Image (cartoon, rainbow, N blue to C red; front, side, top):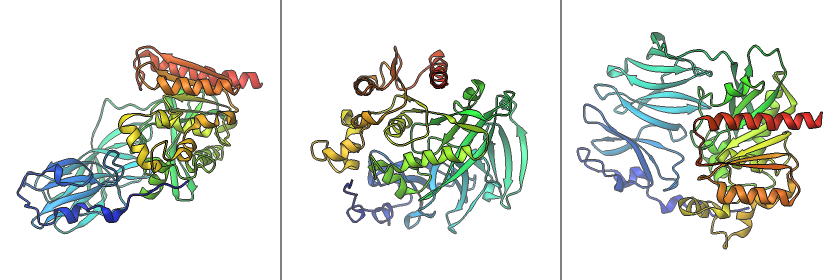
Length: 431
């Protein structure tokens, strides 16, 4: 499948468009190409912002721009995966910005006047949030978030030495699970995820639930435990892997995912998720004969692609996942038109390749479909369920009344109970 890519020669870069702008003037976002966010002004009047000019409706890679006497200057390498927010030191000499390293939200500090920048956090095993740089960047205060979500406020000097400032008494260790960072290779680089295993339920190996998050851009970071402890409390090991559509492998790999390169038969993200399952199996903690998958939103769409390809899973749960991209409307349809290289009428093969409903006949595992009444139940849930039934796939379709794209209150726990029962029933039937 091929799609037309944006021609960078047809776009003005932010720097070229704004060189010579009055540094004392107010920031006019209309002057910027693409999407601009996190505009911030220091106490000394310095202005900085994040800008993405790759897609006007779906920003997916940002650059940091700082205004000086000559105009706007990009002060960090373009390959950094910036995420915001931006925070100035009190004297305006140092600026900090969040930037991902794998799934870990790290901190970059930059001196705009000299162009010097450095990684602030002293280790690479956790995320750092709530950042506040001190005067002249002599130190930075930040909250260190471990894989299990445990939080500690630290003061970190420029040599990377960290001193605990205080212990957040609201942060407690989760005693239902233990967590580890999991890494596995792909053609484009190293992927990461978090593997959680139960505490107090024997030594394993445990049946494995792979949960695929939504978003997908910058929607998952180390310290976001999601439903991992709930799965462990139900007797499963749980893995939340990252995938290329998030940006973890860089902008080229992310753009390939958005375009759907290789779909349907050479699905790079599906292959990388299957590789994550293999990596989890190598730990000896999980039983790959009892591997299951659940995904929400973009993760649900990934589930639908997984089950129409070769995979290691015994059963699947699709929660608010797309099944037929041709049913999209509004802004979502406009973005997909660009990514597919034309409308469904203009590029029917490209749209069919990215719509799992076209390959319902390939599904060989039981599927639980979960949608909110005001979410994607109509039309995606109904269309997907009808296609699965037409091809004799064991499936169940659940619609939560009054709910939208997310579930609220007790319905979220009910979903996890339903999914766990669905997985166990498959295992019992096979046994």
